[in-house]
Image (cartoon, rainbow, N blue to C red):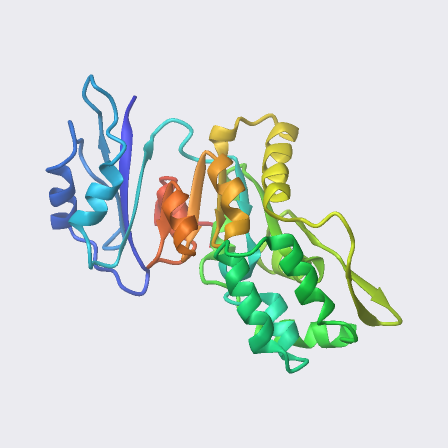
Length: 298
């Protein structure tokens, strides 16, 4: 089996050089010729492990080699590299904010709710009860305020539309899967071009939030279930899937996917993922799959 190392810089800091590739090649078994995916931004370096097989600590060794440099690194087999199903978290992944924190801020409870959110995303407290606790604090919020929050406080993460559109152009299925709320996922999916979205539903009465959620809650295991179910529905193996997220409730789907990616993630998530993105935007996921810049949809 052959493997590939991908080195990627952020589009705003194109620092990747041929020397970086030469340095990486020195610690790879049987390195091949590098392939540039985008000048000064991303490149592939194939290699073939020796008879004893692939060394599990190789990614950490390469990361240590480039410690302090703003490069994201993936090491993976070349087989099934271009994924046919993309599952993406929303909060702090496809968007820069946590929607529930922004809703709470509209009621003057932003700091309190953000503290609970941070602990839940780090895995310090269980996601489901923490979500119920935070949603209960939103009781009385007008539906109109939700639209205002989206328009005024939510920003899309750079590269998200290129990611979704490029993968769809090449035949992949795309879905937003969030522990947040459908009133936001439907807007984000539409803005970025994702085909479907899955999230929790806020309960509403007389145009205001009741402080409750429709059950069951879409949490950590439910996210994994969506990944597996969509793969099965489209006749795909899990090796053909990609999942990206940042919080503890993304861990199960990240670990189940063929390529599980931590995006500017909490430490436990970053440690468990196949690859992590700390410096680039969401187009780094395309480079990890071997897409060149010329193949991007937008």
